[in-house]
Image 1 (cartoon, rainbow, N blue to C red):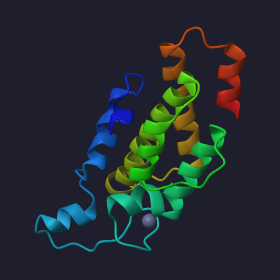
Image 2 (image 1 turned 180 degrees about the vertical axis):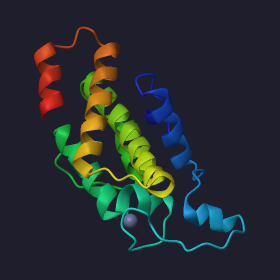
Image 3 (image 1 turned 90 degrees about the vertical axis):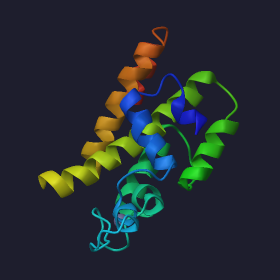
Length: 162
Ligand SMILES: [Zn+2]
């Protein structure tokens, strides 16, 4: 869990991601475990039961966003489970800014997928994966820039556009 508590991670993103790691988000399966009887269907895809692993990593909707976030960072592998993504971040070697970017991006992605799920349930509002991805990139870049004022402006712009 340590990578998502990195100081560069936006606090509200860290909060949502921490709850996801601890299985503490009010997903339908967690609500059912508390005794409420409701139909357990994943909000974005309606194909499977909603639980943390499915909602953030297995669901085609979320998996596509996660995959695009990895591609944006220059990572060519497939999306792993939350546990394995955190493990990869903890073992990440190389440039500090790349690790910081990865931590920030993972937490932001979890946060925005959760926000989208809630917007669809409670506000009947839907965003496309491209809109969510653009919001993730924007927030991560702004945070990243605030963290490291020494970052090359061209590098920042290429991150935003890429
Ligand atoms: Zn789904």
